[in-house]
Image: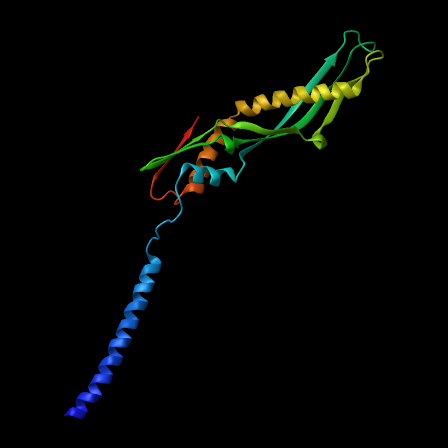
Length: 196
């Protein structure tokens, strides 16, 4: 009988060892699937720094094709000149991230975005086509006329882009992007994104 007990003791020890290892492995696998506590600091400086890395948040593009007519002078062929110019202008709108304000309290993080602005505006030089060109004998400075026409056309195109809603849609897109960027990085706090 003593010999039978000696045989059972090592078998029980081996069984206990295997059971402990199996439990540790199961615990490790369960632990991997549990949500991890964030060790990131949630402060105004930390969030502002994360956003500042972006620099400029360009969220909307707008392309405008237009016709601009220029006529100067009163006497045909002597002082009256002019042309029609077809052009394409490209705009980008967004926000300057350095102007974002962040406020952190125990339950929420409030991010206030600045108003969207036109960040870039330019007429594509390869798109410019001239039609109905009229030359004048005593009023023929073509380069100056084209420069004036481009500036006036760009101003008109920018007004059309703003009227079409480029700034409004840019602000909406900026809110969505900031929410995506900060999602899950606020230590369980609620995120509130406001527009200035």
